Length: 379
Image 1 (cartoon, rainbow, N blue to C red):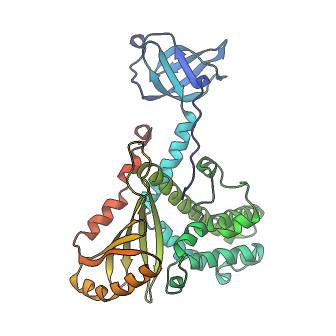
Image 2: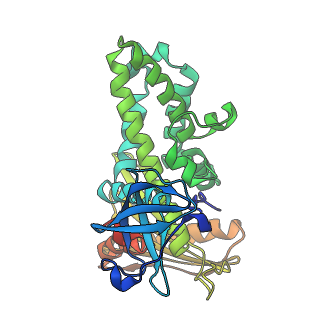
């Protein structure tokens, strides 16, 4: 599974600025540093006068630079000549990536709240007059998809629930992350594509709400539009987190609401396709799956599963021995169901683990996701 593909900034030679002065005669610069350059005089015959760290410098470039324009440049080399690379597009994309990542970190339960609130928001009773102004089929599909993405007793009947969750949520909607981040409306999609996933439907509804808000006759449209915007931001933050996890750690992270008789819990599922080789490619012979479960009566439970080909080993970690005693009788049934699916059981056990909260906090920090090129200029 491949979630999103980033737009990589072009690095053609005409994106370079070359300076004839020696590094010693320029303001302090270091290779890899990103600085702002202001164009003081437009480029003529490939030359432009730029302001670099309060110093005027003549630079050569194949780009049509305009007077007054401010660009971000990265110091590519200092010797034998000073070379700067224009990275404005790279910075813009990194800013958007980091914005979504920061949004996720500051709102770790935003998706959970979106699911629980969204079902109510898109009910005909709550929509009132808006229900007649929006396409009822789309509104109904949004509500139905939200319900279907909450794991319940009914979901147990669907052996492909997790696969359906990924498609219906909208994780795989864009093939290009750059386009996804640049455009919120007006993107090309077929009616079939839009009606099959949550994100596509929300985008369609968002467009109609914008038209209704223009009339000024439906105050409720503006309120719902705000909820839809925040919902799209939540979905896209999960897309970005998964793209970054996928590219830098070979992992995926999915949050799935759990419906219990009394209330709603949350499952955070981390999937890793083996370790990476010397070239950074994932070794797909072994998969690791980590379930961080917030249960209604059993509290926090961690499930660690390792799968290699058709052989599976699984450990359930509980915070209390009494909970383990409750779970152990069900392990036989779990083993039988896994065997029925074609798996050979390597081990299947339930143990007491006092550090479940520590395990959860370590995985939620996403510290390695900040180890990106250019992060130092964004922090």
